[in-house]
Amino acid sequence: MRRAHRRVRGPGRRTALICAAAATSLLVGLTGCAIGPDTGPEVVTGGDGGGQAPPSSSGPAPLPPLAAPRNDLDWSDCGRASAGRFGVAAPGGIRVECAEMDVPVDPNRPTGDTISISLTRAKTGTTPAGAAPLVLTSGSDLPSSRTLLLMAGGPGRTLLDKHPVVAIDRRGTPESSALDCMTRVERNTLGNNGLAGASPSDQDERITRLARAASSASDGCTETLTPHQLDFGAAFAASDIEALRTRWGVDHLGLVGVGEGSDVVLAYASNYSGRAGRIILDTPTPFGANARDRGATQATGVQASLRAFVQQCGSSGTCPLGADGMATIGDVLAKGRTGGLAGITDTEALNAITTALALAAPDRPQAVTDVASAVASAGRGDTGALADLSRRADGLRTTDGQLVARCNDVTGPVGQNEIPGLIDAWSRQNPLTGANSALSLLRCNAWATSNPVNPPTALPVDPLVLNGANDPINGGGGAEALGGLFIKAGSTPTTVSWDGLGYSVLARSACAADVVAQYLGEAPLGEPTDRGCPT
Image (cartoon, rainbow, N blue to C red; front, side):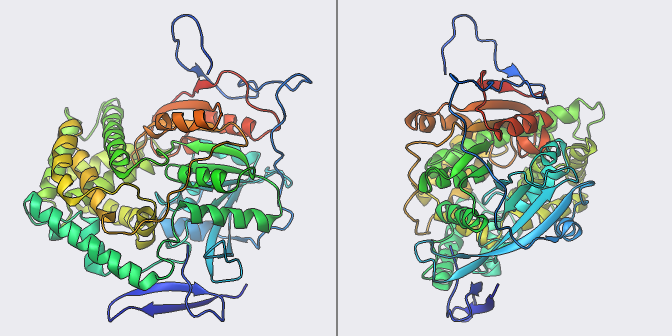
């Protein structure tokens, strides 16, 4: 595999990591009705009997076959290195391997510029050698490789005994040819949502500062990445998955999209019709929704996840957050807004808390209490633990490549003059998250957007939706928002609800992992189409 790496500088201040073929001068990519009362979803306890319809001559047609790769990648062991990169323990009993793959920046020009994509595979000693892999993406939320480690370290690891899971990291992120197109000031201002230096400022000043930084960053990234500044959205991430399918030489792929990764999977189903052999949407985001609606969904959902966090902590009997945990979190965020957190802003504090909850080790209950301790200590003036969580969150969620990817996919951007009204309205509804979600809309306000991906008009298989109610990254409202898409596509999904706290139902529920394993089989899942997994 030949690659050339070089840095291309804009006028005096900007660089971007560029990956190209050796002769290329510039590379950067891109239900049924029932009579009687609603008894709720049927609880699934796992095992082989979870509702899969037995095959029969009069039953539904078999699902598209999934197969092991005919031409695999050059995998090498990377378990210790991957865990070290993210500052977590390597999952016991799991073999973690890494590979790279060069893909076209523009899928319409397969002989043009290329970009290097990173892949991570997890399996166990009992994973069948001929088992079809499941391809996982968490889109621009988090590195997909980090999401895979979360799964490998939790109850969802049971799926690995039957199928290897391959995570594909989003192009332009640190794991897959990192972009570097902003100045440090721009990056910090966007990360703080305009609260420079954690010093007190009024709302109008903050909005103006954030809008100015967003405009400057947009100009700089466009200048640096041209002509590929719009080649990092969901459609291009889907093209990378299609390049993997082609490289493997298989007819269909089993796909799981976690969070915003669900947008990538649905984009794949739309653009590469018939190649998606299985469609698993794990706590999906509202595909195709405009910026305002996505922001409102996130504010409401993340607020709910914080409430679940407080309730879970309180049930331990020794919660560090005290009698009113929501008030404790609110006090810490207020100190961040007024310069009282030793350099940590309210946006950084909220990002630290939600990221830590999202990735809290599923098999370590103390992890949630540790987050509570960091919040409580910060409220008393000891910000060391919260600052550490903030640094980790920043590296996982606010890189240049992630921002560019999100801005590529924005539809219906909100004007600067609308932000004060949204801050007021959303803060009344969601006091801890509303203002932050409204301010975050400005990050992409000056960015040119690509043509949105049309929703799929048909789906090759009925999807499996894993609906997490308390996702601290995106909230849990996206699954409901997809109802219209499924109706128009003539599809009836099976939905598995899970009321626990954290990112990715698959990573945290052995029950959900069992349903996924059944779904990867040859026969469609049978009734019921609404199920529940215990927390």
